[in-house]
Image 1 (tube, one colour):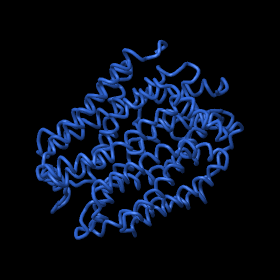
Image 2 (image 1 turned 180 degrees about the horizontal axis):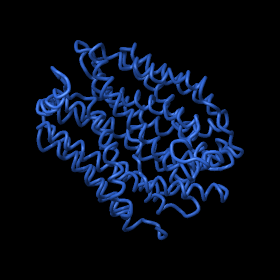
Image 3 (image 1 turned 90 degrees about the horizontal axis):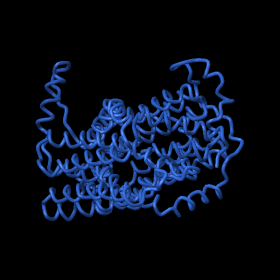
Length: 480
């Protein structure tokens, strides 16, 4: 385990994250991965000997150039990623006559159940390798591979080539994540880390908001492949920033060998109570990942968004003539990210001092309600309300999940357990893609009864709540 100084700093950082709760890394969520990188793979990131200058300043002036460099990288990488993910499942199943690729929904489910778990798993190894080989080298590899993956996707039309291209993208993104969060950890201290990570989370959500809102609708009008070219340019251009602006942070003196990383994985997975807790909580994330698949298909197949379009265009006509805005698949991601930007601080303030498990259950219940609302009506504003309610539930539940893991983990292994709590994303996305596609084909395409689909997903949310209650009643460790 870590030396006393790093351990103390870890707990201070954890308290900052828990109190501020600037937003989970939704679409790659990243929230748990950040904790993992800082506390386990990069323990020396908390040392203050390289941060003495920043502690003499306050606010935005306390951050060095490297901080703002990686914030820009994060904004463009996440904007590119969520720009693509906001429409990927629609593009892949859309008929070729409409500009899509015409893949079956089941085959798209397999793609999504492969590439998204990679985004959660790869930072385990990437964090250790980045410490060993250097952050600049890792970023060079990540941006080159990521950009190549996006560009090849823009050119590919066969299923196998698209699949392989997206795997390349996921590998690059997986290696990118720990370097950015690790850099921020090294250039901030206990005086400015709260603000620093707040800016970090906002850059994520801002990218997820702006790219699908502005760039994706415009590029679709030119050609769907231009969305992937945009992502290739957005991530590939960061190579220049890495070459000419980014500076290699000080190398940790006590990097973890891969063998020790693997030992940590085995140690955590041997704890059946921890694994069961992750499995139960992943049920909620099966629902979350539907926002990038089945919810988008349902929108395209069933929803008439005319009332929303009319309201938005009436507002826009106050500023421009002939406004012709239309709600489309990419705006599902816009609503999720926008809700986080607007409401996360308020939600965090409300739940700041509430117990972890009850708050988690309230959040999951709200997410389940948001999903269940889709079964009630196909009215446009009901659909939007469901998305907003789900987003509020997500930002309520997830920070408290991190807190609850800290409570149930063995006292001498809290950082290690918190690091591997990201496994909820592996399970949720791994199951969610295939399950969602299979259920959609059966109950929506074949039977024409989408209400059954949303009822089933709502029951998964209910089962998650029941599982958490039973876990807390019978399996929670005594120290929690």
